[in-house]
Image (tube, rainbow, N blue to C red):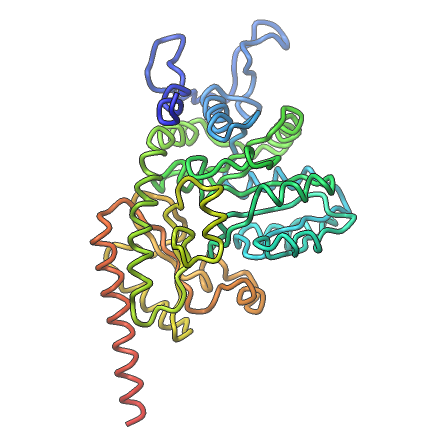
Length: 393
């Protein structure tokens, strides 16, 4: 079976009614035949038929052993970090999602779990950053928002040699673009909110494990802490997966055209997109990704937060909003939005400048999106140039 066929036919027909769509089992509890004897379900926090379909489906998509659905991507991250103990360390990618950084620094550090940050695009730096207390490697590839690429297979070898777990946040690539477990990862996490659900109408998190043993541990924390995905949101996420391959291919196709156009614009300094041959990790991306995704970041030759904010407020089709991966194009200013909790010096070290703008390229016609960006950037920069000249006069 090809992947498109496999996805659709991994979603079961309801055995009781023959319903072609997965039913929403909107129930908190289940009647039992006798104490401890039931049909596999007793309480929805512990298990739910709709959520179970989603969990099995994401495990299939990632070629993993077990899947688990959480109330958000951060709840999924929380469950993975709970695999650690007091005194353990995480070796995390330096260009990290702001929410993960906040959770690591302001929640888990006070419980004795330290975090070291490293440029995961350099295997040598990863090797040198490992300490005797390192127990978990935390990798995003591509990263958010500068789209650095880590060689997952090589990092998996380093993790294994040091008896560490490797977790890959696969949100940007999705299971359609990249399968980290095939490359040696032990765990994969997703913000299901993004490409997987795909319509900006769900908050969801997903964890996939490479083995049943790891799966049992994640399942324990899912049930013990209770941050589960609701039946309705599970159903919406399943519905999103039905078109995931088609959407992700088109997101990637559109983004490639937008990224190429940005490289030609006056006033644009750096364009970060792994599909560009100029990207420093393009060859690694080609090796491990089937598609390059819909996220692009770029900054300006004039590194001004004010200019960047003016641009993100001037577009017509790109809507100013946090999040990504939806059918409509979005853009944001990471320095004051997604990454505002990261100290300025740390942010700059990972390439997140004051003028950096992140795009989530949607499914509109690429020509319209290109024209929209060109107009916004040229108009704002022309106005700034004129005002600067006037000020000098």
